Structures are given as structure tokens and as C-alpha cells.
Image 1 (cartoon, rainbow, N blue to C red):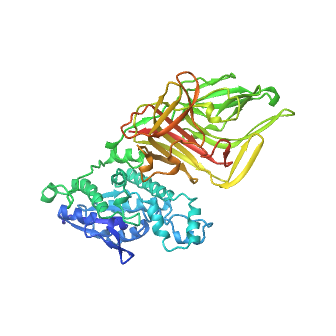
Image 2: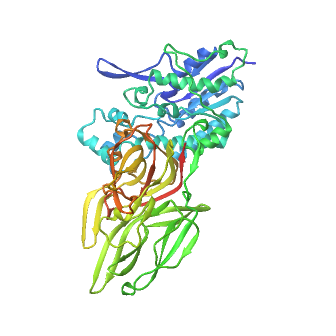
Length: 571
């Protein structure tokens, strides 16, 4: 039998490239203690690190073809691709921001090539181990690739990103999802090197200044995870495998459970290890069950029967009355009675998705015309939330006061998980339309996903106060070409402002409009969020809100649409 070897193929991450400043200039070099070298020494076997700076899966296939004859059935092959494939050519975007710009390797091509590479390597009989990509520090990477550009070029890139630098990280997550699918379909071992970084309270110190290359400590963390899995394929008579990996700082293992079951669950869980998570479905969060309401509108506006939808048990209600169903969900679909006129509004719809249904949230005009009496036109935005509306709605003033926000809740989940899809056909303008006034201004609307945990209390006067214990808020600023499945929004416990992932929209008060609840005296009162709790503060209530718009009431971009499905909580 030939002596066992490690072959590593991929980009600069697997190569062990790190950066450092020399006389004020950023220079790259191969770490003397990179992940592959660490494992080679601990296993006591030879390693061929054929990773390459800037390597895509297309270039990687050529390198693998060149060396595949050297690989035997008892060898271990490490594959780490995707970082360069999902990246854009930023200099081109800087100069021509209005042109179409795609990834260096489009996702479908990336998948096809990766599958072809794996099948070639399977023919050698070697043990194949795929690695996910680590996360990136999007802001640091933005500073890195715009360094040396003029103000116009930087502004062009910012505009192309719709002033949302964090979207760069979403491309990495999308390609990571594809890597997981490939590993699952080919029954290939997969090592999750994403999680040990994001498990850190602040993972930025694990990266070089460019925001994309793990530094020396980052390489050691990757080595720990490779070693943990690869040692299962090293003969036990190799004495070096009997000892755990270590370094000068006494690093310990971060356990990663990998295997066929791991990969299958990983596909559904946005790159997290099975051992660290369980999921709890949110009531009616799969949107397979809807209550249909047929409301008769007043004769003076046509007298038609209008159908609106509620997220809840399967039922049909044919009566003009307030909704009273056993469901955690409320929505912007309401029955109103204004100036004695019965009217409906519907901006949330069930829509077919595969063999089931999802929720479709729209932005559209709602009109009420009565000749000689009233002519009302407002912009309505689709929103679903935990709570209920006070029906019938009797006016358009302060609409958020007409809803009870939040539900009793005592758990502390790690993250909110959901599938989503977005359409934004008319970016660039925001319309405000309320009753008799209408205006249009420049700007870009965003979809809003809010999940916050509160500790509430009530004083003797009936005022309701809250401290924010947990924060999971995310804005979707760009449309998608297809569904983004298993999207994960981590819950930040304590003062969210101290998190490296903090955004201004995460501050106290999730909407520009105040939120309300019913106090113990039966009065509708504002929820006054007065400060931040800490990680140990008990949770009493949770607010969830998913909206097609992040603007104030009666504002948004006509045509914007958000689809959501499969909402669950990770513990």
C-alpha cells in the first residue's frame, strides 16, 4: 500500500495565506503554521497543499486534473472553494455601476463544476472532505477592495450595493448553502468552518485586516476542525493520532459532528452543527393553514363581497365581525368601518409554493370612493406580526395603536430561521399616500424582519414598560432571483449596540411608530421600551414582525413584494 498523503485543493484560505503590513504596505504570505501544515505534522504524514491565491472552482478543476494521477485510495483530499467564485469584479462595478455584474463563477456553473470535480476524485477511491467557507468581515473587506479608488468609484460601488455593505456576506452564505447541497447529494464528508467563527462574540479579531483571510489564530481554528474529522481516516498505529492537536496558546478542540446525518440536517439549518441546535416550529409558520373571511362592503362603495385572509386554522367566516381565532398571528389584512362604511384591506395572501403554500406580502393602493362624500386613497403595505388587530378598524390615524403587539413568551432561542424571496421592480422612489395627500421622494425601501424579546412590567397607573433582552432584526435591501432557504437571523442578547453586527435599525423601538398593548385595566397603552436588559434578564414577551416595508405607515415602494415561508426558532 502506498504511504498515506493529504492533498488540499482550493483558494487562499486552504493555502494558508495571511496578510501583514510591511512599511505601510499590505503584503500576503503563506503562514508557516497554516491549517494543512498543522494537520500534516500531527498526523505524521506528508501533505501537498495545492491551494492557490484567487483560485475559483474552474481553476481548481484544472489543478486537480493535473495532479489526480498522484492520488490513491488511501489518501485524504480536502476541498475548499467558493470565496473567489461568489465575489464580484469590483473595479468593473466602480467604473460601470449601471451595467450588469455577476459573480466570477455563477452559482449554477459553480455547482456543476464542483459536482464534476467530486465525481472525478471519487474514482480515485480517496477520502474526500469538503469545507464550507468561513464568514467574512464585510466592512473590512469593503475598505480593502476600495482602497486606492477615488470618491466617485467608491460612491458607485456603494450605490450598486444600495448602501448595504453587508449584502457581500449574503453572497458567501448563498454559496455556502450550495456547498452543503453538493455534499448532501454526493454523500461527501463536510466540515463546518463557518460556525466556530460566528460563535465568537466578535469574530473580527480572527481575520486579517482585509476581512476575508483568517489570521494565524483563524488558521489554527480551521486546523482543529479538520483534525477532528480527518483523524478518523488515519490508521491508529500512527502514534501521532493518539494526541490532540495543540499550539503555543493551548488551543482546545471545538467539536464538529459531521457525517451523512449532519449534512442532511445542515442543509436545512443554514450551516450550523446538529449538536448545537434544535428547532421549534412557529404556530402556522409554514403557512399551510389559512382562515378565509368574506366581508360585505357597504352598498355606497359597491356592496361587493371581498375576501381577505388570516393566518390561522382552516375555516371560512362569512360575517362582518371582528376576527377571533386561535392564532398567534395578526396581519395588515383587516376589516374596517369608517364613517359607517364597511371596507376591507388585503395585502397578505396565501400563494402556492411547490406542493404547499407560502405568504405573499405586497405593496399596493387601497381606495374607498363614495361620490359626493369621500374619496380616500392610501398606500398599504403587507405585514404579518405576533398579536392581533382591534377590529373593526375605525380610522387611519396612528395605525399601530390599533393593534396589540407581541405575545407572552419566556424562551431564549438562538436564532430566527425562515425562507424568503424578494421582488423590488421599482427601486429608487418611496411613495407616501395617506387619505387626501400623496408625495414621492427619492430613496430605497427595504423589507423588515423583526424578532425581539422583552421583559415587560406595568406600574400602578397602568403604564407598560419594557427592557429589550434579545434582538434579531434584519433588513432585506435587494431583490432575489429565487428563494433563500433556511435564512438565519441570530438573536443578540443584552445591549445589541455592543455587537459587531449591530445596525442602527436594531435600536430600541423596532418601528418609527410606537407599538401598543392592552394593560391589566383593559386600556390600550403604548409599550415604552426604556432600556436594554442583559443576557440573564427573564423574557416575558416576544414581538415578531415581518413587513414588505421598513417605512412609516402609508409609505413604501409600489410593486415591492416579499414572500416568506417555514418560520421557526432555533434553540
